[in-house]
Amino acid sequence: MTDASEFTFIARTDEVEAGYALQVAVDGREPVAVVRLDDGFYVMDDTCTHGAASMSEGEVIGCEIECPFHSGRFDVRTGAVTAFPCTKALKVYPVKVEGDQVFAALGAGTCADDATTG
Image 1 (tube, rainbow, N blue to C red):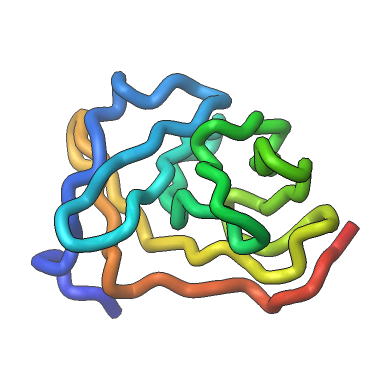
Image 2 (cartoon, rainbow, N blue to C red):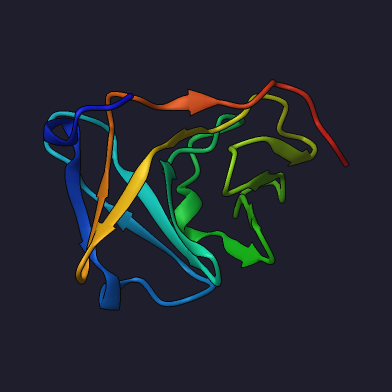
């Protein structure tokens, strides 16, 4: 279980428009992307695993995010690859929402199995 003190402030809930990704700069590390879906907020690495594209510039389609460079897709909930040419999952992070603030446990990221599902 992740200690609450390990959570980092990511964004205010009203800064993240539903169905879109927001890039967030975090001191001492690469940026992350936060996505708001109907069922909550999700935080993942912002850099595509296939190339140096910013995932926050990609389109959110249902529960997937599409890389703006080569149209590979990932499930924003798990980081799993859902479309080629991507083959390596994105790292996703545990999220908690307190009031109007989104936090992520950036030291507790996980990757889904590195295999395409669709």
